[in-house]
Image (cartoon, rainbow, N blue to C red; front, top):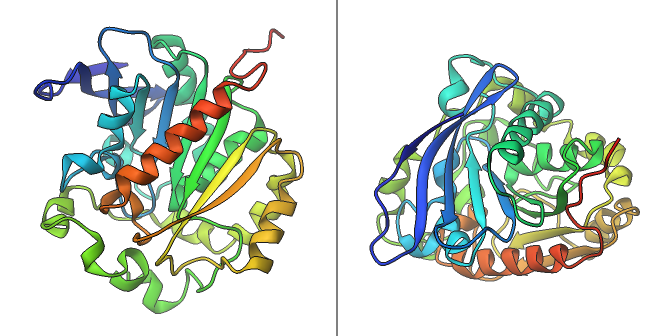
Length: 299
């Protein structure tokens, strides 16, 4: 594991740096932010969506939208990981990995994080869009014993529009962004460094997600919160679809389904990001209060 410091934010007691994680031989790049003067309450691990990178969570257009900054200021350590096939691992994995392989790679990286950094009361996964899928797989497989909960945005169980349709594979501003007024000025210019090609293996896996989710959902035994943006266009979020989503998570002790007003699919890049991140961190606090949360089992 290697680190490289980032210039500190003026007036903030936050240590922010780029790090590299060795995930059983696969090198993943990531961004770490943590409080300087106090131990972290917990470790937040953020997984970006398809066609993005870890910078999605770092407020490229406006500091107010940064999950890394607000989480560290509130006492959490937070790591935004470039998922397998992105960032440093893009050359090593030119075709990326599917959901199951990604979950194993990411779980190996998380074990390194847990061994190398203070994690406080446990690990809390945040996922956006495709990043929710390996997060849910990790939770179902139980490969991170310290996991206390999941917070997911831009992902459901039933597509509203097929991810394999020509228009969606080519990319659609309406599907991914919604109204432009939802984003700070300069978002598209500043986000150029956040956007990255989506590896073909995860795109191929995306079409199978409804069946995959149905098979893994009943094995998830930590609290889960889903957030759907007001202008979400990828996923069904009518009452019947959300009822089915909740019912499949029968083993989860708590399932919340929230709706974020004034937001598009890329929720953490818009003006609503701060409100969404605060709600997600509030849910993390609630998960940390559960009896036994984050305790490693001795086997």
